[in-house]
Length: 304
Image 1 (cartoon, rainbow, N blue to C red):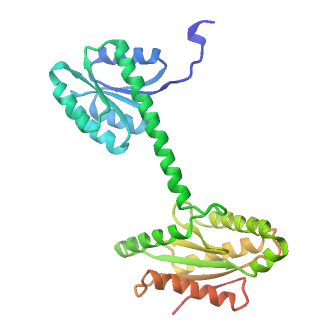
Image 2: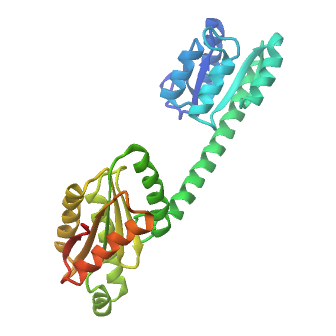
Image 3: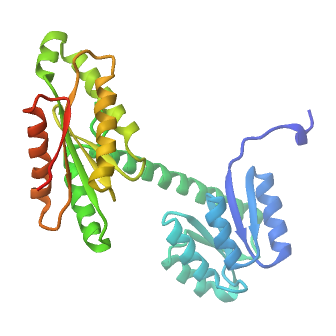
């Protein structure tokens, strides 16, 4: 079988930024043969744009570029992606500039004219470093996600509720918008657990988490397991009447599940200027208490 018909796995993505057509062609062919998917740009501005669009693993960039300098392009690329691997190309006369670029966050530099094997080595080295940093970043993000998530329901946890609420109240006061809070718990859940066992009870709680996620706006509102069989929902920019629609959606969805006699009592409160964080939470909690002690399976709004 001829080499041209063999499908090879792509080793990584490289963006080359250089205004010299000959240099672009040489490096492009060299890295393509090495197994890289190569994109090219001939100015700093074009390079920054392609770095944002293509999301390369490695950027190979000349220091001297038309328009913005390579150093400025480096700053902009690193602002978009702080762990981006950027290798600077430099002539002998601009080695000092290359050293400065290392202080600005470049991973390495290669002097022109370069030996082909050395350039490939530096790019391979940069790729491995970038992969390692990406794995570390993903691991850190996963650790952060787990620290704010309730394992059973997949909703955010109690600690993250207060952190988010504090941030939203700060934003609300600055932007003069609205915020509503739902708090609810399951009616007679202890009896359900006693009759069916805790494993069945866990299935109910997991299902509640799914219903909450499906009832609120993705990446706008947020749902929390407040504790035990109690839940809370922050509705961003929602007035009381809008929040009531979502609360009713949650109530009816839970009532209609496959689990017998599972209903919820929901307390609903809209933020007011006279509230601080604790008073706001208590207003929704008090409304939930009234809903439960009025027979359950209903929504009670806290209207002064």
